Length: 93
Image 1 (cartoon, rainbow, N blue to C red):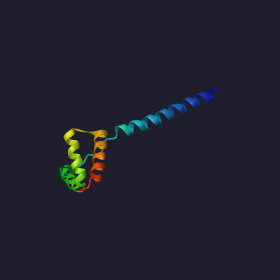
Image 2 (image 1 turned 135 degrees about the vertical axis):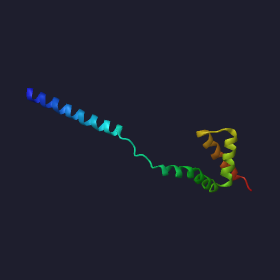
Image 3 (image 1 turned 30 degrees about the vertical axis):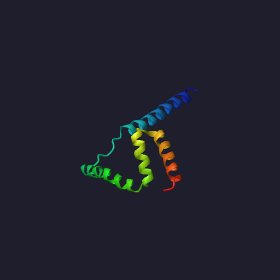
């Protein structure tokens, strides 16, 4: 019985050390440093958003402007824009 107890304690110790070493190494890993050239594309990112707005319909853009004017954010904004677009689509132009 004594041999089984020692074997169990050794196994448990090894298992704990193995799991803790894995967690420590996963947390201490540093992300690779990005090269200085990576800053240039970040400046271009806001310019990339501008063409995306051009793909929005005029109705969608108008509803967004109304939501901005009301200061809506999150779920309230999504619900407002959804209703706004439904109402705008139902109106004859």
